[in-house]
Image (cartoon, rainbow over all chains, first blue to last red; front, top):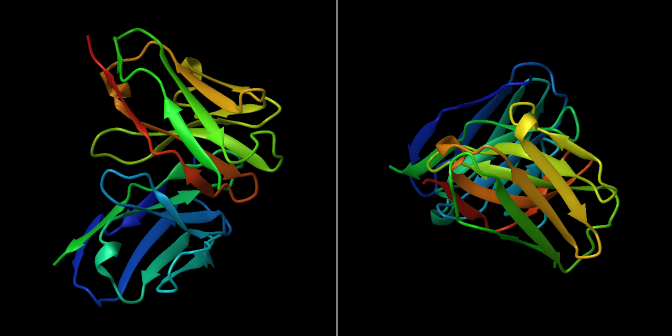
Length: 108
Length: 120
């Protein structure tokens, strides 16, 4: 099984901050990595697919990078609506997939 | 705009079978290149993929749940369904239905989710 880890598990930040979240796979997954945002009480929303492609309608402050085992989600300037939990998802062996444990971004 | 909506009992007794249905609107479940899946989230915890099915009925399951899970599709009703047998309190979660693409399996859209509690 491919295991996913995320760091940090939580972080505190302020509006305007640059935020970086890391996701690591237990083996190489090429670029089969997607990112989601989940606000409290809501379903997750797709942000980034194939490691670096921004989903339609997602603000340009969100970006993704990486390949192999190490991936990064960056929010260039944190906005109030960005305080949420972020999950990575690997899908190397389609159509199965697993999620990372999540990173919670809250107010400093 | 494609929308998915979960329906089913919000309370299930231990050892019984959890049954949920996802109704797809605004598009056809018979579209190729897509899978239709179930994902759950225990209260305060992370996301767990349960399993997925395509329009032809080809299904795939999380190995940790495979012995208890059945997912089926009804193209005439534009619905797909989940059955999880022998439930325990550990199966208490918000259950989401969703569509994912067969290439990178990115998931969009998701249903709003339905809380299922396992309790006597």
